[in-house]
Length: 292
Ligand code: HBI
Ligand code: FE
Image 1 (cartoon, helix red, strand yellow):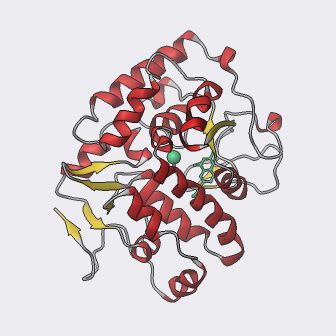
Image 2 (cartoon, rainbow, N blue to C red; image 1 turned 30 degrees about the vertical axis):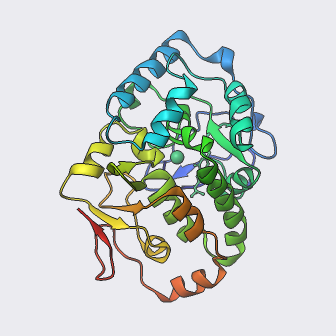
């Protein structure tokens, strides 16, 4: 999903997507609560939408064996969510037992402060509406398929789940420190487009990759993109592209490494980052640890 500069004035916030024309919101923000959560209108989903979910699910899943991290695939399989748009409330029962996370419905992209606050409370915001048929292969902003199929399975992994809460807590702190853009880059190159080095080789764990269709194979096998060992400062200096395959991907050794490397207080890092130049997507540094 892209970062959004959502109107902080609350009310019917209209998400302005970077680089895209302003589009009318598809979720009704006026019915959302103060924390931007809303009811998931299970009865409003049509048979056509459940059928589109089944086709999206089958289409993306068939491309993942051998490309997606086995931890993700096993958890996705356990969710048994292939037959239709899942009830967030129902899935939250097993999720809460596993890692004390809950899924909450939101009308779409929400202001960063609200997003961080929900993550810090171990509540993952899932946009409740499903993309149109014309958006089957690509959608600009997150819909229920991207958020659920891409993000939810790994929330059953305790280390990833703890990292996601730490990210939310870090986001709340970053707001007063001018660190938001750096954190958005960290989220982009891990949670959305991250690769992981496993005993079987490089695998995909980023939600933006998992829900995309063709990018996992590109990310792992195409000669064009750079595959760089995760380094926190390097990632937070790295610019990214929101409307094309990535020019660089970052590789973690484990979810434990992601948790460990992002645990320290970022305050001194933001000061250092402001002194350093941004690194264009696709550019390499001599200090980069490269994967073939
Ligand atoms: N809102 N619903 C929703 N989902 C997101 O992933 C999201 C968001 N608002 C802001 C946002 N992500 C990004 O700016 C993060 O980098 C914070
Ligand atoms: Fe996402």
